[in-house]
Length: 194
Image 1 (cartoon, rainbow, N blue to C red):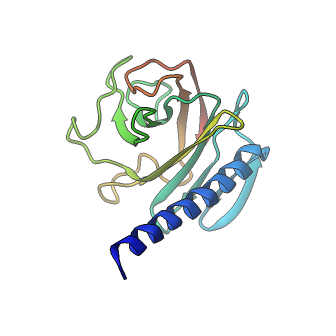
Image 2 (tube, one colour):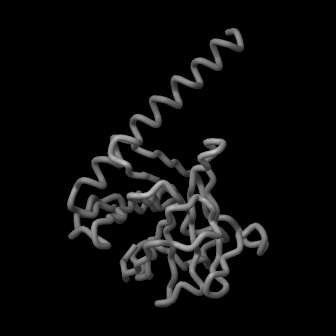
Image 3 (tube, rainbow, N blue to C red):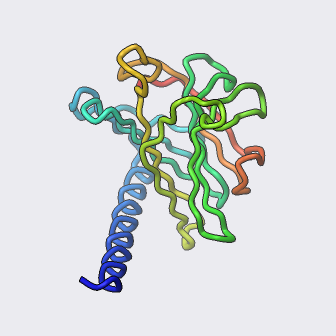
């Protein structure tokens, strides 16, 4: 197969994957329920909602993954955070953006060391929990949609911070700006059971 055909196939696959992701996010964001699975059983709870924003997730024990789906009415970064304590300090923060200048999508696992200070885990020489991510902006509806997939365990069986069934504080925030150092214009948190 020539290089051009391989390149066209890659572009086609990327378009199809993005289209499917947009349909999944649209379904999850417009649906007034929170769906996640525990031990491969489908469970439907009341929607965990932060005003008009919904943050559904799916916990996949068999793959050691948690899928978070987020939506924002802005073009800037979107973030999800998890902490055992009722504080942003000490939270694992997962931020995603799309740079308008280059179209590049970035996703970082950060750790909140103090208010307004959240260096990357790479800088802190900690293990990165991010498995994969996607970011789409719907021009027609002016909505950003993102999916971030993380590993709840990164070390060994002793790493139980974000295990299935554990109660943690989930933080959700977004900004008008794509620069991760820019402050959020919206941030809420609530206690959830993973």
